[in-house]
Every structure is written in structure tokens, then in C-alpha cells.
Length: 434
Image 1 (tube, one colour):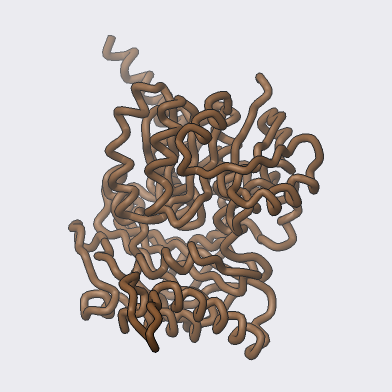
Image 2: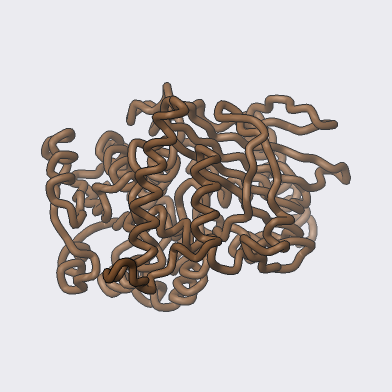
């Protein structure tokens, strides 16, 4: 395998820095010779690069400078884009990367942006390049779990219900909060009863989807809200499903509640307001205020270490019987950066290994073999020193409201044997027919 060069855009951020660390520590898995840490903040990527020695190269880049970005990516093997907010940066970045014909991975979770860039599929195909979009915590892992469930757990997969929570990160940047404003202000797709429905966060349609759920290793009875993530749009396209829902929140709950009140009051507006003879932009004030109040809340309640959990519940039929499984990926010490950055790095490793063959622009369930991804979990967590923080992938079968642990290795093993036997019998029948 030829040596590889990987570029991480937004390498100084909460997600990008985790992805960069993971790639540097796991470079041998894909014969990666160089990881370029690119960001507008040169000081931060310089400090990050010093952790890894010669494999890491820091560089300052303005991703909206098309010429500079084009020069940066043209000789790379894979570009991992972690620059947010996604509704502002993903489209111009992907356009430049496509012109260079460089393979691409991102963590975009804006559904409106996702729909637009999926329309660039033919352009990417004409460049003979692969672009995996939305390969983080959510979207990303749920897409692969749904694909796995459809292929190995069920004869007919009916529903995929996604729940996620995180909080307590060391810092939360303006881009993350801006994304949250965006999510609360737009139509939110939810795929219910075989149809796409659009709800509004503050209207009855959205309030009806609010519910409480338990997140193992994080907390119980936590309220989750409808989220405009892309899984609800992409999964029904590639899998025959009756339902895909996505609900989540951010901890502390008091912080998320404050955010909702600010948006509901219209204080996320960018229209200036005159206050004592000076023009104030509510949006700028609200972001600064939320960052300050969040820090105060975390200290006052002694929140402790950052934490996060993704729960995916899949339901369907197996041998004409109803079945339900629950997938859990959780950490009581890590949160948004790790939960999103590590899966993104894993997909980048798979791309560099040559295990993603599809060309064009596509979500994870359309081009990544979930078994390839799952096989990477343990070695990547171990190599990146995250194995003590993450317990890996937990799987439970739900029977009469009770959770029974299930070995994913056994499930895969039995399914692979069954599929092999099925292929053998099919070939035998073909021979007899001839």
C-alpha cells in the first residue's frame, strides 16, 4: 500500500482536534505518512502538531479562500472536513475538493445542507472521487447500525429511533451554538408511518415528539427533542423503513432549556437593535451570554467530566416474530469531540485503506460496510488511548421491556454462516437448472 497524506480541515476545533489525534495515533493502520493539521488558528494547530512529531504538519488556511484550499488538497489522498457551522462552510469546501478529485469525509449534520450536496453526486462521480457525508456520532454511527441491523438482525427492519445526549465539554464554540440556533429555527424532518413529516421545534407538532429516555452511563429520565439530522432523510432512501426518528439534547438540561428560551424569544436574530444609542446584534449577545452562563452552570452544579451517549433502537421482524434491539455507545468521561471526531477518523482510515469503493456523494449507509467499521472500533480506541473512556459498542435485545446483553460478534458470525449457506444452496440450484 502506498503511503498516504491526510488533511484535516478545522483541526484546531473540538471535533477536528480529536480526529487529528486519532489519525496520528492510528496512522500505521492505513500507511499514513503525513497528517496535515489545517485551521485558521495557526497557534492552536502548531501546539497540536508538537504532540505527534514529524507525522503532523500544521498549516494556516482560510477554507473560504478557494485558491489556497485548492492548492492544499490537490495532492492529498483524503480530506476530512470538520469545519463548522456546516450550513456556511460545507458546500464551498466540498466544491473545491471535488474539483481537485480528492476523496472526502465530513461530519455535516445539517439536513438542509445534506440534501443539497447529495445532488452533487454526478459531479463527484465524474471526478472519480468518493465523498462520505455525515460520518460522525449522529449522523454517522446510526446509519451504519441501521445498515447492520437490516443486513444481519432482521428479515424486515421497520423502525430506527435515534437518541443522543452530550455535555460538559471543556469549551463550546460559537459555531456549535449557531448550529443549535439553526436547528431550532427550521423545519425538522421525521419519517413516520412511511411518510416524511416536517415539524417545528416550538409548535405542537414538535412538542408532541418530545419525550424522556434513559442514557446508560450518563443519566436517566432525560428530556429529548426532535433534531433535524440527516438520518431521517437518507435512511428511508437506502433501506425499506416505516419509521426513522431523531431526538436529542445537551447537558446540563438547564443550559439547553435556556437556549430554547433565547431562540423562542427571537434573540438569535442578526438584525441590529439600538440600545442606549448603540447598535447591538442579538445573535452576538446571545452566543456570548450562553457561553458565559454555561460555564457558570457547570461550576455551580459541579457537573464533573464531559460525557455523552448515543442510543439507537431498531425494531422489525425476524422469522415472522417482532424483535427489538438497542445499541449503546457511551462514555462518562468523553463527549461531543470524541463522539464525533473518532468515527470521522475511522471512516477516513477506511477510505485510506481503500475499503470504500463507491464513487459520488453518499451517506455512510450507502457506501461503508458496517463490519469494516465495527472491526476498527477496538484497535482504534486502544491505539488512541480512548479504550478506558469508551466501552465500545453495547448491544441489547429488548424483550417485554427488559434488556438482555447480546454479543455482536456472535450475531455477525451466525449471520455470515447463514448467508454463506444461502449462497451455496443458490449456486447448487443454478447448477441443477443448467
